[in-house]
Image (cartoon, rainbow, N blue to C red; front, side, top):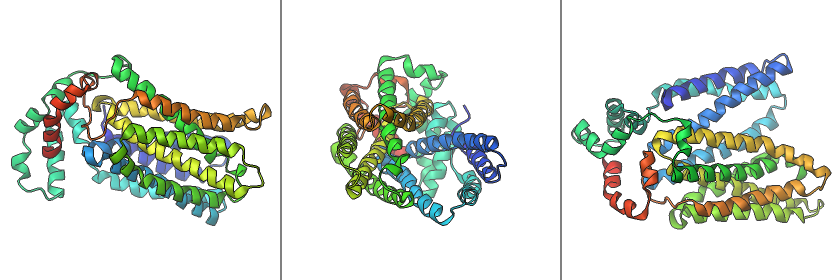
Length: 384
């Protein structure tokens, strides 16, 4: 309803204020309240960043764009490990990581709204204006002649007609193909997030220097994530995701049989596991935006974040199962991604396919219709 840009601005401002105030929280209750609002802001910022980047990117470049976005979190993990080592007092550390968001908030005023969202929400004039701005910034000549309302309506006729219908969260589950996609995606997201946080929040099980582990994990996840675009390009989405999920699960299960005295091997396996988990999340981010139509993409990504946060909340509580069997939590951490790897096979392949804009695009997503619409999708990407 409000678009991507406005909500992003507000959440950046809210995160800057709540994060900075947290450093001066006088009581634990106020601290928890401020952290709650910070967490709400972070979730929405991550959601909108991904949606905006994908909706401004062509089919051939989506994987690289999403990889760069998710790799930024790995770089942030490296920086956080270094900052936490330097600033041991938590209030100082909180202030250092919060103040930059005021700069991000100010810079967000120069951010463009998603032209695709403007078009499919029946605002073609504003969408055309944003397209012309981008064409000029990218040095495209004769943009005024190429980008006009007649050409826009011709290329996006189906999407403009579908934009007349208002959508709700329940529309994600009304039709069979879309319902199948969203349920499988939510399960995969939940299953690959549980072991990721299971390892990240239990670093003490692999050694004593948690600052070093943060830096190592951040560096390894950045390296592995950088290989994701190549795998997606030559292997496709489904084989890549399945392979990563299986390798993640196996590395966790193998670590169960390694003795506590073999710290180097345990840290190595944990690093490999969290690296595959990070790469799996990157691959999932590509799949998520390619499988959900534009009209419902923000809503679906919101559900995706809910599944992710439920998994991150559950992951540390699974460690309480150690009272029944010391290895039980790690067995669950290992089995979850393997199960998700099997579920991935029921999702369609989306390599080099245009983004779906409407529910009809998803429901008619058959091999025949893909060939028929290939010319139209080419026109949309080259002209607009």
